[in-house]
Image (cartoon, rainbow, N blue to C red; front, side, top):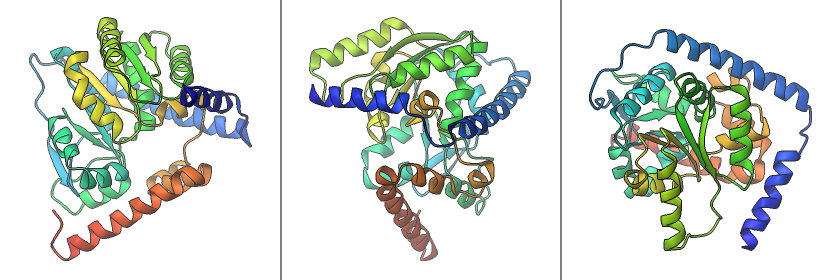
Length: 306
């Protein structure tokens, strides 16, 4: 109970804080979102008739143990549409370098990856590494962009989205902001579970709550790898055609936190920008990510990494 109270207090501070140079940061964020929305509109214009039956898995390339699907942002949205049309429970994964590292450290994630409908690449190191193969990844599909793109796409197509996870108040704030930006959005539900293990009854009630809301898409914000493991364990019971762990994207949307400038994103240095924003939370994680990357490259140079 105390955890929930503390989390709620910190969430209120987060939601109400006024960052330095906030107006300029929000202006940059707005520019990035508008550019993204133009790409989504282009993808909608190119949308083909959805074929009948469950979609086949997209072609993938395995980078450091994770099979990344060779999809652009537009192709990701179209593939989500096919999953929804098939009306079978499923999920996909957005994987960054940290998720690559976690997959190497936690063998159960390998089965989670194999069972996913597809995995999009949210990290420039993997995009660059794929270019050494005959199946390069076309681009990075960032989770912080995907939440806007997929919500815009869903509003256009009258899809129902359920917001699950995050600190108290953050998921609701994200849902409210996205609803205001995309008026056709249907919010199937919003729920932020307490930051403690749920009892069996609480877990059963949560699953029933989501299932009865009949969402087409469930956004899950539980952190890595907790979110992916939770989805893999529960997606069949939930019954939604699409579940996806979206990491800190609720925070990005709710707090209006600007992403790194485009040139830093293309240079693969967005991690540095984010670490400067949240050094106490991210410095240790990025240190371990860097060590994993160096080890993977070293093993490949010796022919020992697959």
